[in-house]
Image (cartoon, rainbow, N blue to C red):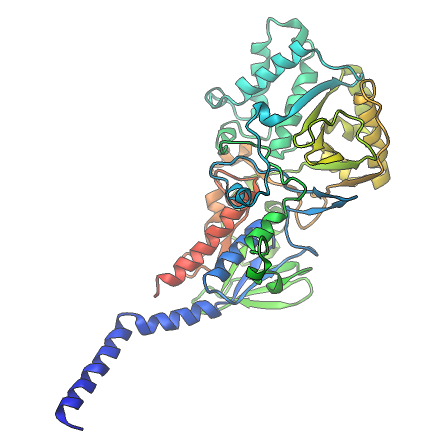
Length: 511
């Protein structure tokens, strides 16, 4: 080899060394590390599905979901009643601007929204004698709710709970209106159930007044519906099973159903040492990273035994003091609708208020007292033979503990009590109810800002924060980790993406 050839060969070797030193060779190694990184996602709800799809789309091939239920979806659960798809869990798309669910689904023609007043809904207020509440009273109580309960400046002025604020404000607003003031108990009870329906608490004295203003409301229709489909469609969109199944991300193939996690052992908290995830069946998974997306209700019940070693105090505090309750739905299927079903695309909302004599009787009946917590019945968009009955507060626990037949009979009796004078209420042909509170894999429906949340100064970002920022071994996601969109499906999805982004960025830093 002549001197010139030797020189060029030497330069080429120096060039290769330089490439490696500047990260090009290392990048290949990092890409391999990323490709082979063992990631366990606990929970196949919207946050778990969102995290997994984003990781797989970014080159992480070794991702496994462990799901305790026999299905995916978590608190998004679309099933069948008759020929209709019904949502036992999440049902509506709340808002449009900034809502990732709306942004994903609306361009595909899957979500129906309205810009009509009150989103195109119609309401009827009836008392327990079956009479319509007079229009003037309904207007006054409605204005009180809309102009005072949602007035953030007033709520923040020294009140701990939304219940305390509402009760004092009611007395002040209606002090010169004896007709309404004499029915204070009736209307405050209805207002409380309305609050609990949106905040998933068991008492409005548990719901933080300053925290009430934290939730971010996206502009647009708050009752966007899925037409003939159900909310589980969003999972298909995330996994790219819809609209073109040819593009499906293999999430389902990497999901282990009926795999309830018993422990997450991160005691070997040094680089390269695995996290050991053990299921109740004794299966052990080794992971470089674990994303925990289980509901807050499960963390409240099991964090002491779930994590080895125990979680740090700040995590335990946010788990203990963040609110988590339950709302229940009972779907009734009828041969023919007995109500006015002119507009099948929007909700007809029946609101129920109890007269004092009837209240005393129902509360004295241990089997039926749960009906005091059934505040409304609604038609279901695009499903004209369905009614959904809503149960809130402590009544959720009582209802879920009753046999199916008892719930059916009590519910029919309830409808006839409130609607029987105006409508010829027929007997339903089928019923299906939710049971989120009594399901050990959920222990409730969604989180809320409790009075204790603000007393103890614990907030969702503390729950979302990874345990080990340097190695990213244990991460958290789920609606309860969302600072502004807690309690929503879109918030859960965003949290899953955020956890995935943390891991993506973690590997990029080393490239």
